[in-house]
Image 1 (tube, helix red, strand yellow):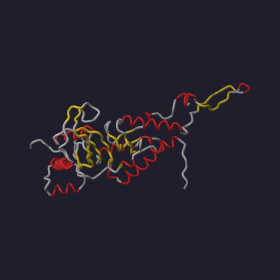
Image 2 (cartoon, helix red, strand yellow):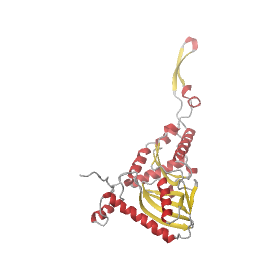
Image 3 (cartoon, rainbow, N blue to C red):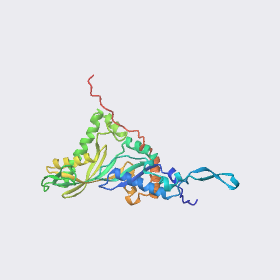
Image 4 (cartoon, rainbow, N blue to C red):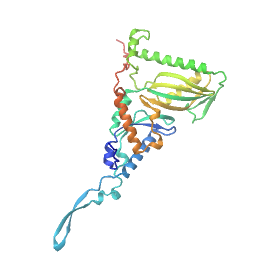
Length: 314
């Protein structure tokens, strides 16, 4: 069956519900991303065939003093008087993860009824993967390279093997912490059965948890890590890079953070800034909605989420 070109704005609006996978550039806030997407959608919707102006009943003098009743255009509803049919306030948006200003990469945005999907994706706390680049030898106030340098140190004694051993110990400590929060001995059969059920999530959404961290590239003084985590924030990753520098008997700050995966949403499927238009967003929304139906566990996964520990004495 041949595809039909739709130029009717109300018809297009009815399909504008779902989530989209955007590539957020570094140095841009999520609020700016939201405004750019909304303004682009409203501008292109208003360029389509919008609904005609409302009609009103007019009673006028006719031929031979007879009254004539007819319908005329209501000028108060004309586009030139009332303004565009679609405004930014008409669109509802919600992010699954509020990445910081210096974080780039995969960003999931729900539009209109897709805000409910975005909320469910956020509550399910899907695993996110980052490529984080740090700079050894300098420490800054905010742990990022945009702020003032507060300390300097040598990096001659740091090799890739030393960084790899440190990252392995960080991963092991976080894995041990998962089972400690659940109150289960990590060497027990119960711990094995709990791990087999799926990703162990902390009950507190504010508790960052690292499931995997490894060194992918080391070009002194730059080093790049791949981090698998949930509940993480940009500030937490910056502090992590700072602590890595201290543990290496030096100092470090974060140069870049790029999210390459959010659950089943991949970097190669993200829409670049030049593609944030109505046609591309609708195509990307159809792909992401199909992905959500293909992997329903992203919305409601039966996982071994950790329960809160009652610290009160009996």
